[in-house]
Image (cartoon, helix red, strand yellow):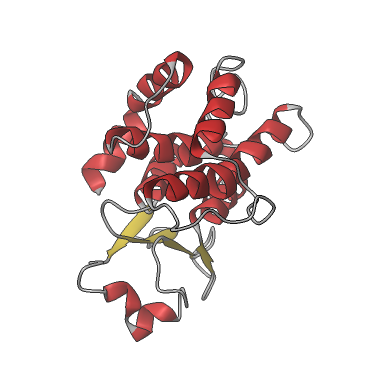
Length: 208
C-alpha cells in the first residue's frame, strides 16, 4: 500500500488542529506525526530540520506520486493556502479568476495578521500601549466588528462557499469563543454554529 501523500506534524490543542480539519475537508490521504509540547518534542534536532522555529504545524508533501523529497510547508496560513491550491478538486479556494478570490485572499491573511495578533494583545496586554503607528492591526473589538459585518454580507468569509479561509478564521474564533475571550454577535454566532456542524471538523476532532 503506498504511503499517504501528506505527513502532518501535530500536537493536540494547538494551531495544527486546524490543519487536521483542512486535510479532512480536502479528503486528503495523510499521516500524523505527533508531538508533545510539554515534553518539547517539537524542539528536537530532527524536527528542527523540518521547521527551524520548532513549532507545529508543519506539513510534509510527498507529492502526487510519492517521489518528492524534503518538501515541507510551515505556518498554518501557508499550509491552508498550499493545500487548497495543490488539491483543487477539494474546492477549498475560489478560482484565481473569480471575484470571490479577493475576499478569500483578504480573509486568509486577516486571520493571521489581524485577528490573531489583535486577540493576543487582548489576552496578553502590554505594560504600556505601543505608539499608535507601531502596529499593523486594530483592537480586538474593531477586528471582531469587521468580521461581524462581513458575515452579515456573506454566508462564509469568502462568499457563498466554504473555503480554507473559513478554517483559518473559523478555527480561531471557535477557540476564542470557547476560551471566553470573544463574545459572538448574531452573525458570528450563526457562522460558528454552521461550521461546527461540518462532518470534516468532527472527523478532525476525533483524529486529534
